[in-house]
Length: 130
Image (cartoon, rainbow, N blue to C red; front, top):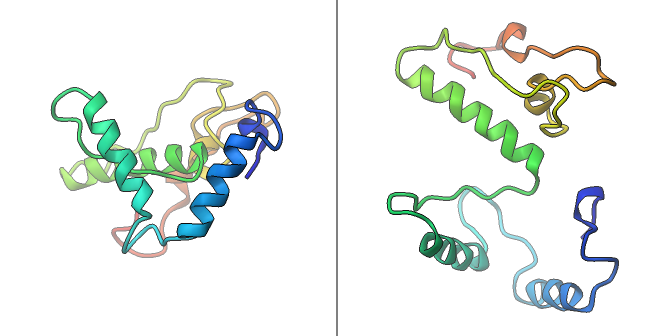
């Protein structure tokens, strides 16, 4: 369990290793669609207690890139559901890092990429796809 953005606790930290070991002993994998890992539900309950009233739903991801891509899809889907499917412009910070996924790279032109991608201009393979 490591990554460029996840190394602030140090390598092989004993508390983190113990938590990973305990989680793997209980249930090492759980599909994200039909069910969830029991710890995710416990975490969601803890988060609900920290949030203002009305903020009681959570959608967990494996990475920030997945979170950004999903947020962009939710925004497009929201307007599509309201009958405003023509609203496809996505806004992000110039030279901002919004993840390595297609959506994240489309809303923030980094100096190394030089230009923004426009996923909405690529079209879809079937009607109704976002």
